Amino acid sequence: MTKQPQLAATFPKRKAWIIAVTMAFGIAAPIVIAGANSQPSNGFGPTVPNNTPAPRPAPPGMVWIPGGEFSMGAADSPSDGEVGMQATRDSRPIHRVYVDGFFMDQTDVTNAQFARFVKATGYVTVAERKPRQEDYPTAPPENLVAGSVVFSPPNHAVPLNDHYQWWSYVHGANWRHPTGPNSNIVGKDNYPVVQIAYEDAVAYAKWAGKRLPTEAEWEFAARGGLAGKPFVWGDVFRPDGKWMANTHQGHFPNQDTGADGHVGIAPVKSYSPNGYGLYDMAGNVWQWTSDWYRADYYQQLAAAGGVTRNPQGPANPWDPDEPSERKKTHRGGSFLCTDQYCSRYIVGTRGKGEVSTGTNHLGFRCVQDANSGPKQS
Image (cartoon, rainbow, N blue to C red; front, side, top):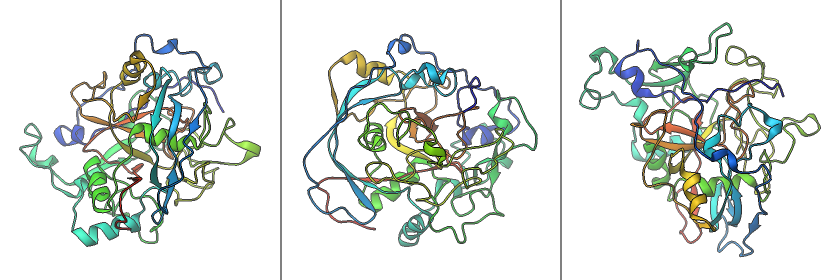
């Protein structure tokens, strides 16, 4: 994989376009957290899964995740140089965590599943609602149009210091029309649903009798029983030349060659599952978790010492790049991740997103507590 300096991957905010489309924005600098590089690259301990069997059969489309104790975070590996890791200091220091067992969706929630939810409830997603003037008092009235954020690559190479060169707010973009009103999801029932804001994901999960995973649950599940590996499948990005996840090939952001078999988003289950039978825990689409995003949260947990049991995330969000924004943690990376800019397909690394913002590379999957009863499918 080509080694090039990486800038901090930044998610665009829906409100930025609503308030002032022509506003100038700069890329956020890589997060610098005092002392976060002190963790040695060999700081991972063993993963110790629980031996307790599943308390009941797995609900349809879900698998049992046994829970247990593991080392959470991402190593500052010299082999990665600045690619992927220098901009992910928020994923260090590595620290020990315990999570109880739970059930998890094998795949991201699909278009077909989300459509059943909408049909049953009449739910209208954030992207489908016209923004209200009272929520955006400084926005020009002409900007108060329903829509969402879409990857809009230029047709030529651009400097990677301004992500607004490849993201746009598109009127009429939503889960039914992921890249704008001229797009649709016909024939894509088994693709991940995207253009989902945080409250949309929570609403679906509640209807289905489930919830969103915590960040710790998500990482335990993604590791599939492995300890300290850079990828959810092991040590090598392409073992025996095999593509293991849907990521970006070609020159970012203007060219996706589709060498991994897909240009853009892929159907669920396009690649092999991890050790727990979960698909697409790296690449394809980012996934919401229930945790607030704090850049210094891992430092707080490590400073407390010992093993943190069932962490629920910090009490409030804090992104030093945008301290006034309320952000939740994303996990897994997407079809846009590349060693040229964002290599968050590396397990243990973290993403972040403002809660009202969906994009065409952001979805979710759900979990269910061990002792919850049968619910919607």
